[in-house]
Amino acid sequence: MVVNREIGEIFKRAAAWLPPLSYLIAVTMLAGLVAGSMAVDPGLAFISWYWAFAIAGCLLGIFGALRIALGLGAPRWIGAALALPCHLWLVNVVKLIGDQPLSSMERIVFGLAAQLAFLAAAAGALRLVEWLSKPRFIFRVGYWFLAVFAVLACVDPAVSAAGWTFARTPYWLMPFQAVRAAATLVACGAFIGAALVLSLRRGGEPWTGVVLSLIVAHMLYDAMRLTFVLEVHERVVSLWGPATMLVAAIAVWRIGTVLHAGAVASGPSLAS
Image (cartoon, rainbow, N blue to C red; front, side, top):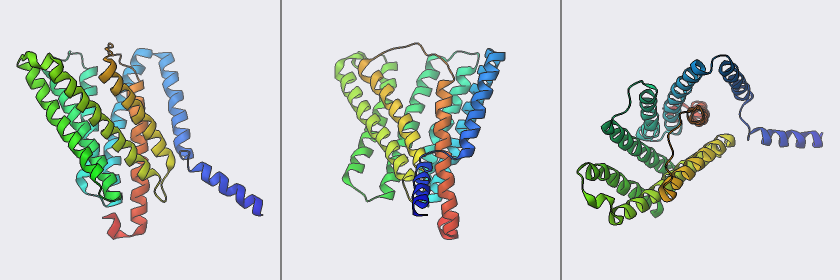
């Protein structure tokens, strides 16, 4: 009996690091549908699944972020900030799939909006970690890095559009890239920290934090490579981007669902 009980505890702990069985079945079936449809009609299947992944990821990310804030009883603006990139991601998908090419002004506007949305979400994640822990000076430093880069991100396209040669000199580019790298490190650290703190809470599911941490780490690698190596590649539209973000959105949705269920079970005062 004792041995059986210990084996059961081991399996129970191991199961916490895996998604629910229903999620695994759904992912397996979805992968089979994608593979089958791509074999029948690759062009139509690509467009259909691209849209489906983008819309599903956007909706799951938005409602998952809001449910996280509600489940924790955190300030509502944190959920709104975390959900902000999903709105712009959907708009960007619509523009990329459209027949009309993006104008130079649209590229500037979308690029700036995406950066500001990313910084706002990072500030929300950083505030969430601070709200769940104790206020420390390091959080203030992180806010300052995010704020400074937000200002520089707004100034940079304006300076470039004005034709100032100063924007193409090392005196501007080097500080800009340095602040950008620091802000990116702060942002990705905030996202990973929030994912781990939420997933490792009592009653949480560690697999969600692992999934989000791996995806954010990959984003950090790409961002740093573009910042320091300055590699320029032609944009290749594939299912990898929306599929990856869909997986991240599912993890966010799962965290929000678990937190919201726990808040409801604890009492109406915590769920409100």
